[in-house]
Amino acid sequence: MRYCQLVLGPAGSGKSTYCAALQKHAETINRVINVVNLDPAAEAYTYSAMADVRDLIQLDDVMQADDLDFGPNGGLIFCMEYLTEPDGLDWFKEQLGDYDDDCILFDCPGQIELYTHMDVMKNLVHQLQSWDFRVCAVFVLDSVYMVDSAKFLSGSLAALATMVQLEVPHINILTKMDLLNKAAREQLEVFLEPEIHELLSSEHSVSKFNKKYQKLTYTLGKVLDDFSLVRYIPLNINNEESLMDVLIQTDFALQYGEDIDVKTQDYEYPDADDGT
Ligand SMILES: Nc1nc2c(ncn2[C@@H]2O[C@H](COP(=O)(O)OP(=O)(O)OP(=O)(O)O)[C@@H](O)[C@H]2O)c(=O)[nH]1
Ligand SMILES: [Mg+2]
Image (cartoon, rainbow, N blue to C red; front, side, top):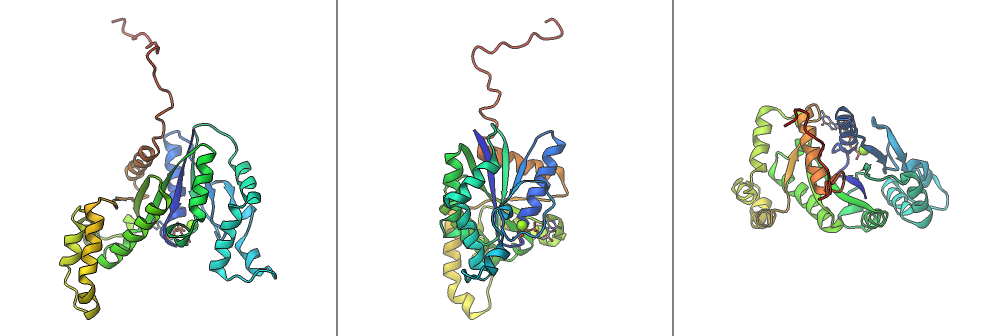
């Protein structure tokens, strides 16, 4: 069995930074976490990558190809679809090698339509599962944008769409907690309480538009609330404890280590040192 996290989320939300921070944290606890760049448009990243999709296909080349007529967005989708075609998959499989019990983070592009409603990422998940990977989704959202209730709702719905689409264990992470001041952090804590819907509807909206759609906001908030669909783990990458907490939760989602070093009935416990 192998283990992997698909690191997903809107552009600039902190996916690549999360991968780098978790890889570094793992080193401090003597654990190896590999990272694969799956963003064909990536410029630079600070983790050490075990593979890079840009070795297979680059967004610039696709956009400049005479026989293709893509802008940056269509081009990126083309690249990701290429990865899930037979040639791309051969390359991908070779890059991942064949190791047991390893853990890989896939740093994905920030174009969320790839996973909220297109099939590209879903196909990739099925492929990974057929290669004996246990997959979980880590949806990364920028906490700075989550202190406002409308944005909180919209971020939550994107996370929810991804969860429903990919059908794998799902974890939401709020990044950049270090950038929030005390007031913003307190505000966010209120959002992290279970009763989201009450909160969203109690915010008195002045605009006509908001008044008209207040009931919709309330209902959407209630759906999130009633089904406990969306929960968040705040992450401060400067804090090892916070990183540890995230790793514990992702390990749990993947049931990482469950099959490793299992002590069976025949297991002989070593003798105690003190002779008792
Ligand atoms: N202070 C702080 N800055 C962060 C944190 N996470 C990300 N950033 C900054 O936010 C910007 C975007 O971070 P990235 O990790 O590149 O975000 P991304 O989701 O990989 O972005 P795309 O790949 O372009 O979609 C960078 O300037 C990071 O340095 C964080 O936890 N704290
Ligand atoms: Mg990135």
